[in-house]
Image (cartoon, rainbow, N blue to C red; front, top):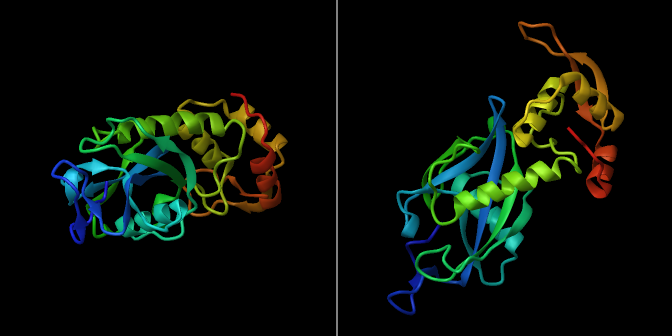
Length: 243
């Protein structure tokens, strides 16, 4: 959790150190996910201040007085990585009384999908390093951040069965195999290729670009893009994807 070293106020020796102007006992954490080498990856930060100094965790910190929690999530992500304007979706609140060692702190967790190759990550003022890690092979993190990731993975395995996921994980034009690899990475299973393609095409979510891959050593595959209108309708009303 990001804690500023300046403008600190503290009521007692045992209380959590809260940056001036921030809300006590309330924080935000961000779970940023992407696909690399066919694996679902999560973005982690190594913090340089506070109780998290020298340790790895999710991208988070304190909420300012008068600040919307969505704005706080976006601001903290930018502060730590330099990435701006990601679409973040709220996951849930984590409020175990003992989740934070120094005091009672409730955190509101968000998640986002990104293409790792699209962003140049720059550690901000609260982190000395940021890096991608296999989401299913995460080392011991600060506080309850491992639990948050586990919850997010289970949530996404259910979500992808009823809502289309992939807009922010793929290039504008992609192959059916690349789309299948997104589903496999999130579901953590191998899918039957003909069956997957039949189900995806029945959803009418894809537009054939009438183009093929270029610069590949194997047989060039057809390229597709999402039909944004159908995509948004499915996000709103849902569908059923069984595997």
